[in-house]
Structures are given as structure tokens and as C-alpha cells.
Amino acid sequence: MANYRFYRLDKDDHVTEPPHIFEGPDDDAAVEQAVQLLNEQVIEVWDHSRLVSRLEPDKGLDPTFVSPAAIWMNGVLSSGNVCDPQNK
Figure 1 (tube, rainbow, N blue to C red):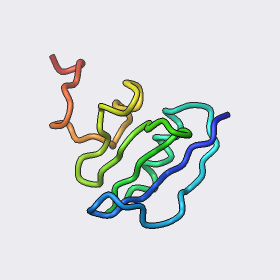
Figure 2 (figure 1 turned 180 degrees about the horizontal axis):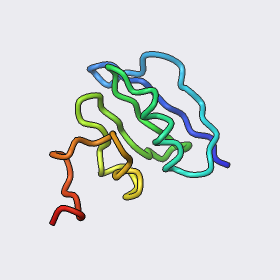
Figure 3 (figure 1 turned 30 degrees about the horizontal axis):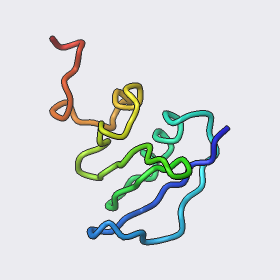
């Protein structure tokens, strides 16, 4: 199990409160948990000094920082944000 930290950021990318701590088996589980906490603020998911994912309320996941499995989680990305391999 790894310890992940979820940081809420304001519009200037400053941390707004102490991190939410999540102990989970992998990055995908941490991102899934962080999605549940997503509201009007950006959330960054960190594993020690490694940025795992950046979640934005309007955009969902930033695919630059997240594993391919997490990108396809139901309800996180709108259909316009990513090419669906099932819809060729």
C-alpha cells in the first residue's frame, strides 16, 4: 500500500488546506478516490514527490499525469476530451 496526498489548489495553484491522505494499492485507486472529492477546486494527487494526476473541475483528468486505466474511468472525462477507441 502506498500513501497518497491530495492537495486542493486555488486559481493561482496555491494549496488551500492540509492534504487529504489516502492509503491505497496503486495510482488508479488513488485517482478514483480523488475524483470523488473533486468540487470547484483543482486537486493534485501526489505519491511522495511524484505527481500522479491533476484533476480539474471543468476538464476532468489531465492525461499527461495519469495512467491509461484511470483515463477511462466512467464519468470522469466528457466524451469530447479524449478519443474513444471503441468509437472508431
